Length: 377
Image 1: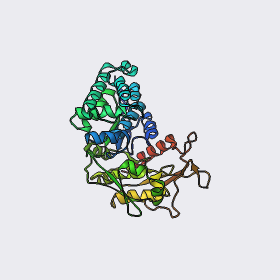
Image 2: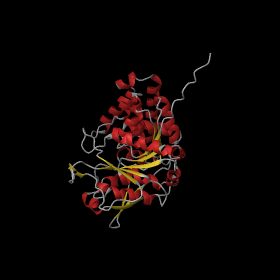
Image 3: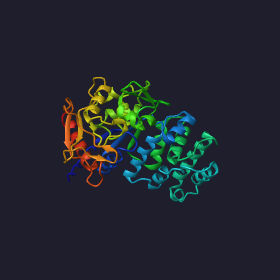
Image 4: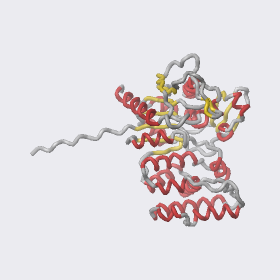
């Protein structure tokens, strides 16, 4: 009797996304739930919020974007829902030291009901990492609006003697997360600097993101990072990608600077994959009056003449007038069309959420381009 040969399962496409922790969340979730392998490459220069307080206290690589991307992975894969609740929790914004200490102790002493429902090994690891962090920062630390997840992941980083990759792997193992999240660099204390069009400098990611209205009107000419080498797992992911995706996200602080890390532009240029910019839907203070064509050109300039961009997904609304949501205009196209990358124009707006991408439509186009890239090899 002859055995019927088993048909091999088709290889799952591998999509690498370069963006910050939050803006590409819906796209990440959509891709993962379609069975796609996703690697998130995130900034290593976050200098605001809870990350700012931790960086100033311990002088370590910021973990905020890593934490958010890992929680997105865990949520999308259906793992560790209770862990997501704890990691996304924040302490109160106001309150005296004693009140904040009591609130923190509710987590650190295992009294929170969610901790009691977790698998014992996960709860024990979380409490251990929290204890390490609390001991390291000392009593003078500013706990206001602190991210509990940032505290835990920083504790894991300290437990692994500063090796962020080992800390990520330890957490992934605990929560059975299949997808990968890597900081684009392992360098500590990276500072992002923006040069405005009038020559002034703005130092720090958090200051660039929150430009004043006057400075936003002046506009950003360029951003820079001190020399930093790329994280090896990030380069490895780029080399095995079926598609490399920029954004969506804050262009000058969460997307473009990845190409300023030594080795990243070269790796992307050498990757046998399409490289796709997802055009942001709305302007922010970083990109006031900056066209999508200018953003694409900024990526190409950061790539120093290398092939770092093949496609642009450009939102084209059905109504040919300038649209505004709140104080934000929709990102415009330049009067003279860009040359070089293939521009795919669609109405990418989510029909249920104004000013947000339709993640399903964007994901389908990315997968189509990933397949086309493979066929062209």
